[in-house]
Amino acid sequence: MNSPAHDIQLDSQGKLRHFLSVETLNREILTQILDTAENFAGINDKAIKKVPLLRGKTVANLFFENSTRTRTTFELAAKRLSADVLNVSMSTSSTKKGETLLDTLRNLEAMQCDMFVVRHQDSGAAHFIAQHVAPHINVINAGDGRHAHPTQAMLDMFTIRHYKGDFSKLRVAVVGDIAHSRVARSQLHALRTLGTKEIRVAGPKTLIPSELDHLGVKVYTDFDSALDGVDVVIMLRLQTERMKGALLPSADEYYARYGLTTERLKLAAPDAIVMHPGPTNRGIEIEGLVADGPQSVILQQVTFGIAVRMAVMSLAISSTEISQAQGKFA
Ligand code: NCD
Image (cartoon, rainbow, N blue to C red; front, side, top):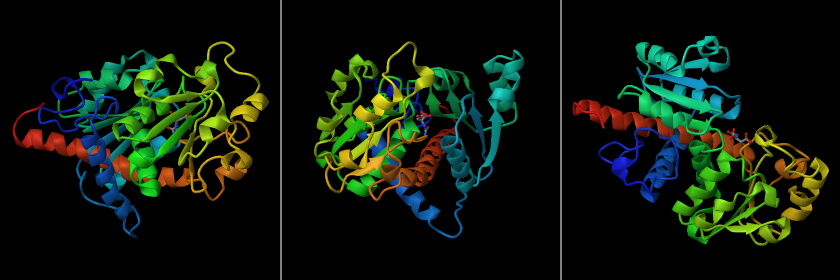
């Protein structure tokens, strides 16, 4: 694990400056994000959902890859913090005319942007950008390749804590295409750092990466055994766009073995919650009745995502403001 001094995400005081991955962050910082999000969740329930924390700041959403939930909730989060938001559609930007990514960034810096929210198809892209931006700019990773999706993992942790409380008492199963999922990677790190009692992973052998052992997770290829008594079931989408070669049986066979049906869900604890980062594929990884059923908190995840993104943005901006006030950058 990186020491705080070497973690590019942290400033010299150990505060969050960029949010790129949960992997190197400690329990204190993850808990601070969850606690800060708790305050913002309260604001989001009010008639006037705005606070002035990012007034005068400009946030640029740089999405090189498609997204619905993540982009819109980042936009709402920034707006509820009173920031100005630029949605730069990278698929139609000048990087398509041969301009390098760094030139595009320099231009956005010249427009006095304060924060870049980056989604990119390549693992490490947000990290690369964080290494090259001007010192006053904060970078938030909104998903990079199959590497990390830290705000998704934190909104998932927020949802779990909201419904189930103390992580040290919980059995959590993460199910499906673990190998290609940046969400799963970030979730497993966050669950471990937050002290989850038991973390299970289930899916076909071809979709379970070999490096899971060091994360202290239990691996199951039999979904029914993995579900036995769990408090939280997190289903994942098959990331077919990232699969090379035949890693899967047919969709029907996958659903028969790994689909979360009403019948199967009975194997979990009676009050287990069902989660999914979206987009859901009904009839492939989850039955429609389960996705819409009383144990599903899939839409609540989306709502909490706004508060968690507000928390991450405000923590990052406040670390930069403190550095600026002190006349230094980390
Ligand atoms: C995920 C993603 O893009 O990584 N979705 C999301 O951000 N809510 C998961 C997925 O695409 O399956």
